[in-house]
Image 1 (tube, one colour):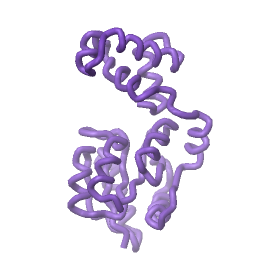
Image 2 (image 1 turned 30 degrees about the vertical axis):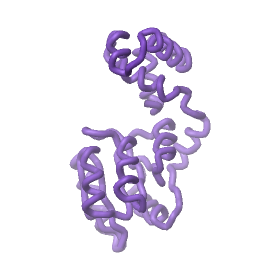
Image 3 (image 1 turned 90 degrees about the vertical axis):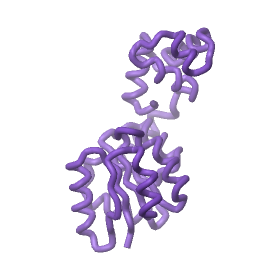
Image 4 (image 1 turned 90 degrees about the horizontal axis):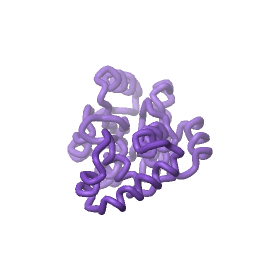
Length: 201
């Protein structure tokens, strides 16, 4: 029996997954959570074979939760199941250690088959998304550019960003300017919007 924990913030979607996967004779949903910051404790409690993770959840994103799962239970495989099929998300998820990346449009039979493949040691990626990721290339932003760009959300003043990230104001300006240039944006707000759309942050 393959033991599964589901992390999905939409109650209706989570309930549907629990019900539909429960119809499979070799799959058992042993835990379910609606917040990213609840995933680690669920994994610690249930020791599942696999965790199905949504990306955008309250408390902590699914992408940031991957490391928590690996720390709590290194043998637990992770599959991202999301509405947001973005090339940047796929690359970040796989780099963090996910073994599968599927979109919610796929039929549940396909999800069940993917779960079996991942538990057997395979990697499963939505083929259309895989093609998009290859054409999109690597994340153009450095880790520090991402930090500064995210910190600038809402028009936060340069001085506040600098203080929060322990950088000088001129360094913050340089990182923002670099990120804006790499993303072909007109300003930092547009750069952040583009980075989010493409899944780079």
